[in-house]
Amino acid sequence: MNTKTKIVYCITENKGRKYWNRVGVAFVNSDGSINVKLDAVPVSGDMQIRDYVPKEATPAESDSRGLSYQALA
Image 1 (cartoon, helix red, strand yellow):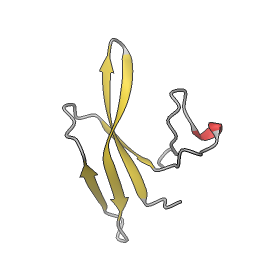
Image 2: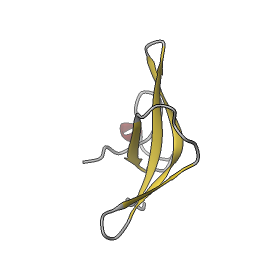
Image 3: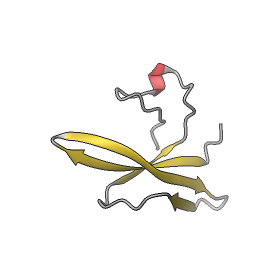
Image 4: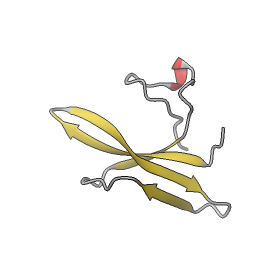
C-alpha cells in the first residue's frame, strides 16, 4: 500500500448525524508538501484527509459506518 496516497472527505451534518462524502484525493510529495485534487467543491469548510486503505482492510481498521481508514499522526 502506498501510504503517500490520501482520501479527502467532506463532512456534513444533518439532523444530528455526520455524513462523510469522498470528494477527492491527496498525495504527499517527496518534500512533505501535499497536492490535493478535488472532484467536488465542498460547500462547508469541514474536510478531512485520511490515509488510503484498500477495501479488503480488516474489521479492526473500519469504523462503525464501514469506512476503512488509518488515523493520521
